[in-house]
Image (cartoon, rainbow over the protein chains, first blue to last red):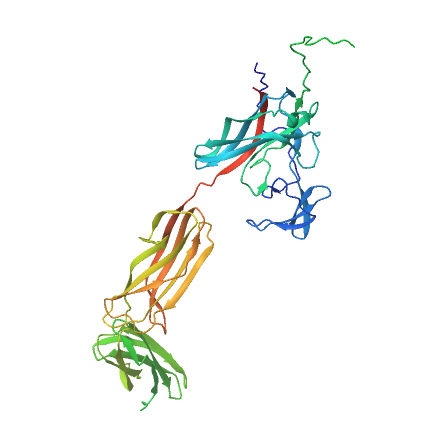
Length: 213
Length: 249
């Protein structure tokens, strides 16, 4: 059975006022742990400061540091119950201008928070998916819809670890050095899904042997 | 030598003039008598052209009066003859003093002639005649200008140009005089500037002038116009990226 909640709202919720339009949040490879301190992004030369205790990035300009983050906003759809093996579809919306390109879109589910939260996104292990999407050439900014990424809910411990939890979700375009909301990263959406605990089942019930005790 | 009543004290005129040039002449006559004298002045070029024709004036005792006129310089040396006359009590005019001054024929100034014979823009290893169209954005440009000497003598040529981007901002200024040996008659010299970025979409312009005579530079040819048009390169740009909805399949 397909349960669809298509609420095409485009950009939903309050947009973060924290980030300047051209400064993105640095992307850290999974498993890499950074200490607090200043970092320079090699491509742009932008100077950043990372507060490891609070997992907060700042960018440095004109002698001041400014906090960077991706907005946490409400989900555009009602919360969806998921069990292992279900498929969560991310229906994407964006504007594009440029030559025909193929980009890898990455979708993930992680720890949930309420809208307005300012921390980073903690992904759940194996709750992610990638998909290559080709976008035709457009000479003017053109609204693109109908593209999506399907995330198959994992089974086993990856699912059990989050049984009964609510999950947040987001999508990004891979290969960026930084994440810039609206350009290569969506906002972080709150209360997107709920991991439904599996109900135990007993089957082929029977007596295999009788013993005198 | 002064007359009885008057003296031509000066003939004001250039010592030389170019053929066709208007030569202004002033004859200054002084009254040397003890009372006012009615004086007439006559100025004649080579006894043929009376360019000051009996101009009269009552000159007070001891005063000097200027009589002016002009003529067109012929293609030869000339002599200006000046005469002063006084009016006697019998009503007749009598010659009183005369003087003369030579005006030699001057050589005409040299007319410098040259032509911007070829204009090219080099970009991405190719050379194209200016103006160039649809240059891909973000390439580097290099201007080549050829100046031709259209005179019958060898000339040292110079060049000056300014390149502006589509916003009117100067991206290259270049000027130089060619090094010895200079350019022989009918030959051309190539001037090459410095490289600059063609990083804006739109029309770049160039104002270029070809010069001669370094001691008193003269523009002999100019080109003010388009250098090239730069075509914008489409850069992948995403915006308003969002998840429109989540659904379960």
